[in-house]
Structure formats: C-alpha cells, structure tokens
Length: 189
Image (cartoon, rainbow, N blue to C red; front, side, top):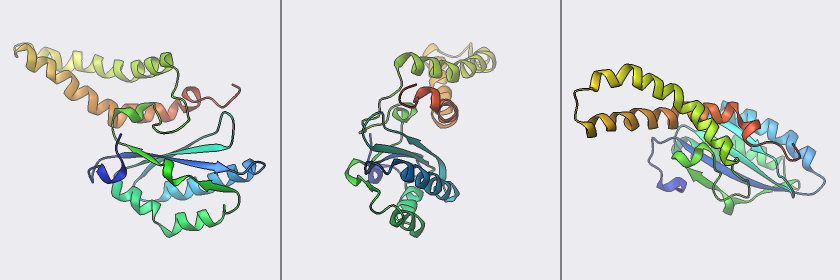
C-alpha cells in the first residue's frame, strides 16, 4: 500500500475515501453522492467512482480511480470538489485520516484501511479466472509457438511480463467495475 505522495507521477492510482453520515441523513447523503460522482467523472484523469454502502452503521466509502496521482491531487484540491463539500455540511463528514491510496494488484479487490470487506475468495478466484483465461489462451496460441526454441527461463518470463500488466491495467479494472454489485452486494442481499 502506498500513500499518494509515494506514488510515481504517471502511475494509475485508486483512493478510498471514508464518510461518516449523521443518522437519519442517509437518503440526503446518497443524493449528494450522485451529484459529486457526476462532477468527479467529468474531471480530467478520472477513471471511475464507486460508492460502497455500509453493512451497518453510517460509514460510506468512495472508491476513486485516477490516471495518476497528480490528477487525483488536482481533484482533491479543486474548487468544484470544495463546492460539493459545502453542500453536505451538517449531513456527513469526510474522515480524512482514513484516506488510503494504492496502485498495484491490491486494488483488484481489497479496499485497504477500511471496514469494507473484500469479496469472498471464491468470487475473487472466479473473477480472476474470467480475466486471466482469455489472456492465457491468447498467449498460448500466439506467443508460445514462436518462443519454443528459447531457453526455458526466458520463455517462462514472457507469460507474466505480458499477462500481469494486461490484467492490472486493462482487464481487472473493467471486470471489477462490471461485477461490482456481485462482488460487493448491498447489505441484506
């Protein structure tokens, strides 16, 4: 896990923001989340926003994905975001000390530093399989026959060198977004 300041400038970044909502104001807060989400999605570098509702209690979590730490910082310090925050005064408080940012494979499923549970393992295995299988098939079909004469360590290196970046930057973010309701079902479902 990395903090925003430790992340290299061009690395994609995922940040989890935690909000404490005053009891009885959940509906108002959820309407507010729709507006600030639309605003964030229009901001340069935003690659998606997901909200996780609490299982119990009044803590909500926003998962924001950005193209790089610089653009995330620009959003966090923007006038647009500040304006949205003034609209929620007295309804909810952002718990700034609980902000966590990550950049690697841990963002496939887990939400570090939060009380939100990662998906059950069988769902993580199935989702990873759905992402890895097509890549593995393509590598075996297109790459393996062309590398048959290479030394074993070099041939073995081709697989993770191709597979891991494709999974991390392309496939798993899309699958996590498409399957988020299944991976993170609402309480009571």
